[in-house]
Length: 81
View 1 (cartoon, rainbow, N blue to C red):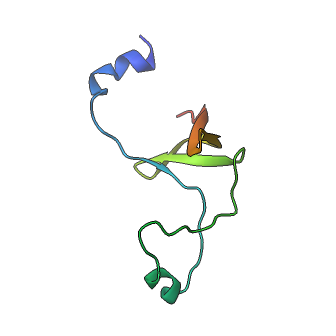
View 2: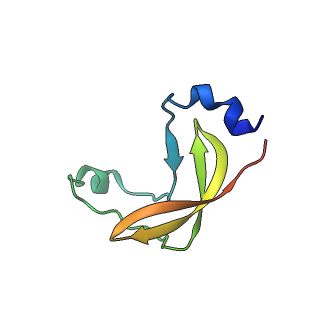
């Protein structure tokens, strides 16, 4: 039985997947000035590798992609163990 078949009964349990694109230090004043729709620049761009987490645990890696003006992540590797 494959690992996918073994965990199939758990397939409908929601899990939170975290993708960290970047970290940035901002002054409190700058944070207070943020509004809905504000843009925080990042030094990352399409094609760069990023880490993927579930429950705070590293589970794989991916690549930043842009598809039809939408930023996304292509999973490139799953961590063993």
